[in-house]
Each structure stands twice: as structure tokens, then as C-alpha cells.
Amino acid sequence: MAEEQFNEERINRDLLGPLFKTSGMYYLTVGLLAAVALVVFVAWGLQLSLGIGMAGKNRPSFWGLYITTFVFWIGISHAGTLISAILRVVQAEWRRPITRCAEAITTFALCTGSLFPIIHLGRAWLFFWMIPYPNSRHLWPNFQSPLMWDFIAINTYLTGSVTYLFLPMIPDMAVARDKSTGWRKNMYRTLALGWRGTERQWVRLEKAIGIMALIIIPVAVSVHTIVSWDFAMTIMPMWHSTIFGPYFVVGAIFSGIAGLLIAMVIIRKYFHLEHYLQQIHFDNLGKMLFTMSLLWFYFTFTEYLVTWYGNNSAEMPVFWSKISGQYAPMFWLMVVCNFIIPFPILAIKKLRTIPLIFFASCCVVVGMWIERFLIIVPTLIHPYLPYNYGHYWPSVTEMCIAGGTAGFFVLLYFLFAKFSPMISIWEYQEGLQVAAHAGAEPHAPSINPVTESH
Amino acid sequence: MPDTWCLAKFARPVEARSAIRRLLQSGIDPESMEVMTSQPIHGEPFLPEKKPSKLRTWALCGAAVGMVGGCALATITALNYPLVKGGMPIVAPWTVGLITYETTMLGAVLATLAGLLIELGLPNFRNLPYDSSVVDGGVVVAVKSTADKKPSIQDVVTTAGAVKVNWV
Image (cartoon, rainbow over all chains, first blue to last red; front, side):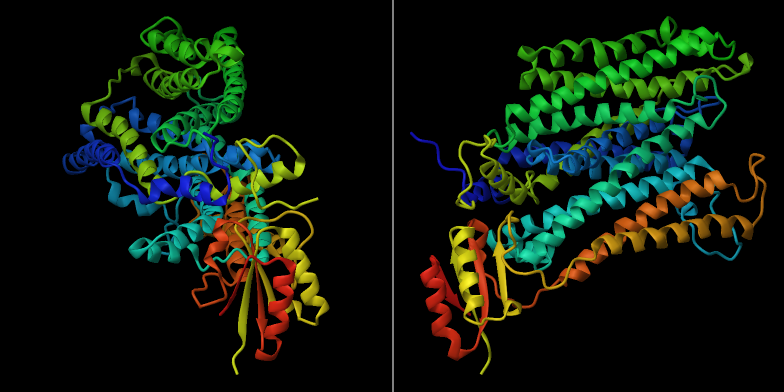
């Protein structure tokens, strides 16, 4: 039987389908994820009521799993907006089916990551002290503290990312409005803001998205650089490094692409988007992941080589604890996950299949979480003075909160997928039109009927 | 007598362009026409741009406001309660620069969003001419018309190849 033509009607039906039809499996998945997310909030509630002693933090390990997981999620957030913006700016046509998946990751990873500094505060209700507002005691936040830079940078990135996610969603909300009934119609009518798809609206929307893409790239780079400065600005062994900024940015993009690939595989399978998320998208992102794996290895090698060669007496205990000491199993697992496994899978074309890319991406995500842990904890328990050396082992509360946020993140992502098409409908249609104009092979079986005839 | 809108749907942009050309030749004011599509159509615009977009200006102005605001916030608040922190000057240019950079970007983001919504007059929930079938493809040309021009418009769009014509 001949395959049905890929026209607007078919694309609308395929991409809006998951919004209007809900399977029992979806409810089950959401229920399970909600249960996992609940664990986070129950554990946090316990910590709030019983005190920060519930966490395994101690002197000198004041930062532990919370800050590790915070840095990890902020890194994952680089999947979306940054990658989507770069691909838009360079007009990579294959980006079209992946931008929405990517931008949603950024928004939800930032929401998840932003919880951690508040959880880490202990007295979370005093969080508002970081907000600069006039008060009777004339006390203002300390803008010379890297933690305030974090606060400002993450809020800027979150605002930019939400805007960057929302703008291309407006026309899709209008399609959903026109195709839905009942309460959904009312909801999508509100979200579509009265969009009609006039020529004037399209011109301005595309211009606004272009401007936003240009703004968001330096913001994304600045965010993870500033996160790295939380460490590099302190004079702690193996933290006070000038390459920490780019090292963190590379790591963030690395874990971000891996996170995006995992999300794409799941979304593709779960919502039956095999026609839209094709091998070429995984192949191209796989190549990007490969490049980032090489870059990550280069930065890690440089960082450790310079430390070893310098033989600084304060840094060597940290160095050896990772290479051959108590953290060596984690260190070498990190190297295996971030380099040894992804390298052949991503370098050899025959191995760059969707299941193997998925496996490599999972390894990278695990490896990058370990990397964050190894940056933070070994340094903290080996400060300058040897009699201040300590130990750190996360408590059950910490593990529940840190681990549970994965469920929280996936829950937010799944809920979002029920309310917005995970592939930008209009951008996909535009891509087919552009391909037809250029006479190129579109990434779909046939071309769009809305094409200029020549 | 109130104006009515003719909503003519064309299968392809080339037919819509032809209809618009003929409507303009027959004396229809371009201001009283609108073109709706489910995606941006590349190539020559259907209608002359009424007012050029000033989104770049919006973004630059927002960035400027953010820059001045961030710089002022970090500087004035430090001077307001002067405490030496970490041996740094009360107003440290490096740290003020960082805050200023982020607020500059924030200003640009917010101003671009505001500029877009203002230029497009969104949100707008008034009953404006619209044919919801446009989301399934094609090009809808909306023409504002008085009763006396109705037959001639109907004739032009039908001759140009409209697959559907509605009067609302």
C-alpha cells in the first residue's frame, strides 16, 4: 500500500494526536513519575521540619549531592535552548523536528536544577533574601558573591528559555485551538493569543525568534561559566582553575546533547513519531555528541595533567584520591562512560544506530553526573590543612531528593508533551517547503503541497 | 451598511499571488487585505509591508535599559550599605560588569517579547476574519469589501483559482 502523503493535514493529525488521545500507559507512566516526584517533596518536607542535619553534609564537606545535582541539571539544560539556537542561527535544516524537544528540556531542567540551591539552603523559606528589593534595613544582596551571579544568570536564562520555547509554540497553539473542542479549545484559544497566521505575524515572529536565538547563545554560555565560578572563585585545591569556565560549558553541552538524545528516543517511541524523528537526526546529534566527547576528554586530560605536573602539595591529595584513592572507581567509571563507551559507538558509522546512540547517551548522562560529584566532593574533603580532612557520604534524604528529581523532571516533560506538540508543526511544514524549493531531499517521504510552482 | 470580509482559500501561493495582483489592479486597497497561511511562505511577499518591524530597536532599547538598570542596581545598593567584602572595592567593576551583562540580556529578551506582542497587537481575542481550515494547508486571502464590490471580488478570486470562498 502506498504511504499516505505528508501534507499539512497528516502532519497536524500525527503531531496533535498525542494531545488529544491519552492511553492507559500514559496515565500509568505519569502516576509512577508522580510517585517518584512525591518522594522528593516528602524527603524535602522532612528535611525542612527536622533540619538540615537530615542531609549528609558535614564539616568540611558543606556541599554534597545537592550542589552536584544542581550543577548536573544546569548542565542538562544546555541541551535545549543553546543547541536549538545555534542550529537556528546556522540555519541547519535538520534541526526542525528536534527544537521543541530540546527547548522543553532546557525549561524543565532549569526548573528542576533551580530547586537545589533552595533545598541546600536548609531554611528554604528565607530564599527571598536573594531577591533585591527595597527594605527597611537597607540590606541588599551581595552582588560580589558568585551565588548572586548564579541567581541572576539562571533567572535570565530561565526567562529567555521560557520565552524562546513559547514564541514558536504560538502558531502550534493556534492549530491545536482549531482542531480541538470543549475545554481544550478554550485553553488553546487563550494560549494562541489570537494568532491567525497572517503574513505580518509570520514575518515578525520569525524575526523575534532570530533575535532571541542570538541573545540566548551568550546567555547560555554565561550561565554555566558562572556556575563554574562558584568553584573557581574559591581558592580550593583543584577548583581555582582558569579553564573551569570553558570546561563546565563543554561538559554542559556534552551532557545536554546526551539528555536530548535520550528524550528524543523516548518521545519517538512513546508518541509514534518515527516518521519525524529519523535516523539522520540521531546521526547528526550523535556526531555532535562525539565532538563533545573528544572536547570533554581534552579538557579533562589538560586539567589533570597540569595538576599532576605542578605537584602542588595541596592539590595532590585531591588528585590521587580520584586517580587511585577512594574515588578511583568513580573516576574510571566516569572515563568509561564519557569516553571509552561513546567513542567507538559514535565514531563508527555502522554503530551509530538509534539503540546504541541511546545507550551511549545514557552512559554520558551517568558519567557527567559522576564528573560533577568528583569535582565537588574530593576537593571539599581535602582542604588545605590536612587536619581538616573529612569524609562525605550522602544521607538517604539527600539520595531521595537528588535521585527523585529525575522523576520530577521526566514528569514535567511528559505533562508538557500532553499539552504541546513535541515537534514544532509549522517549522516542520516550513522545512518541507524549503526542501521542495531547494530541490533537496526532504526528511519525509513526500513534499508539502504548499509550494511555489515554477 | 457594515463591511464584509471575503475569505478566499487557494491551494497554492502562486494562485493567491495572482488573485492579490488582480485585486490590487481592480483598485482594492492593500490595507484592506490580509493573507493567512499555516507556515511562513518564502519568496516575494504577498502584500507590501505596511509598517517595517522595529523588533531590533525594541531589543536594543531593552538591552540599554537592562544595562543601565543592572549597573545602577549593583552600584547603588553597594554604596547604600558600604561593606568591604573579600578585600574588594565597595563597587568592584568586575562584579558590577557581570550583573550588568546578565541584566542587559534580560532586558533584551523581555523587550523583544514585549515588542513582538505590541507590534502584532497580541493577545487579541476579537472576532477578526479567519478561516480555520488554513491550518490544513493552502493560503487564505481575506479582503474587506463593501456590498457594491462583492461581485467583482468574488469574480476575481474565483477566476484566480480559489478553492473555497466564504463571506463573513
